[in-house]
Length: 138
Image (cartoon, rainbow, N blue to C red; front, side, top):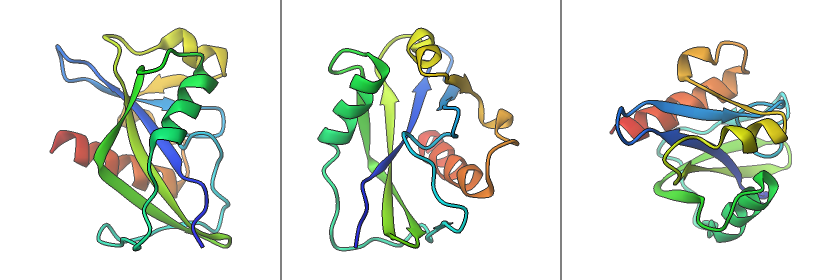
């Protein structure tokens, strides 16, 4: 049984290519952390039922207090995490603004981090960040 999708939110600076991830107080997976026993599936794992991202993207915009269209999904990326409650899809989304929405992140206790600042995250979240970063860089 699939659970509600989670998001990794990032901003890629159009002029410099700098990539920063939104890190919430609970980690980089918006908007709920995974249980400790969760594990990342192999990159080629893909169940037959996929989620449409529109609802979760809009939910992210609302939680961040951003206007519609401020977050967009990276359609070619999807990771799956195995949890005791079932498989959970993780989608990659990016902020469409010129600069990261720092104020929106601060309002919910978050901040933007580079991948090099991810040492304090769980092993699962670091693996998800690596996969997302590799995808963004091509």
